[in-house]
Image (tube, rainbow, N blue to C red; front, top):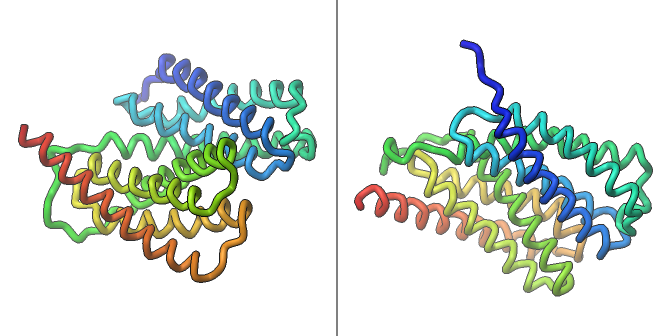
Length: 247
């Protein structure tokens, strides 16, 4: 069966992509003199766009956000080069192009995660130990993206304080678990825990370590607390879904 190309999804993705990619890139690039956080902010903008478009569009729309991200990348390249933001000054043109290409690729991952988030609450089972790996990947993608955005925002406005970063990190994990529990068609406590574990590990590697030093105890504590918070979020999401189904 031939698949229909959805122009509305393309337009939506271009608008959202321009807002998130340019907005996050300009804010981070204006605040930071090094490219690490601005790069993560730009890539997060691509992923967020993919997630939202994949989620809100009922039919399969992974291709449209991916196609649109190419246009957004061209716009971003022109804008970031012309504005000469201090966060991007150390990047060559080829480096900036490579960052935007990575954003294009990750838009597909975000769109796929958004498709998963559509879910089917009517088929949810209460007692299931089957591990749904697509939901683990989806939860990890959402968890990392939300954590990066929250942590970046806090650093921009309040500075790199460990306690505030921890709160933002845990809030991102709680939201991830809640979203999985709310949208997944099966019991998601195990998926939420595994997604939380992967989110903790990857976030520590690519976000927290680049901002402030993190010792072994903090890393271990982050893994344990992250698992619990993600599972709590998953449990709350499942309860909310059951209440909605019953009403």
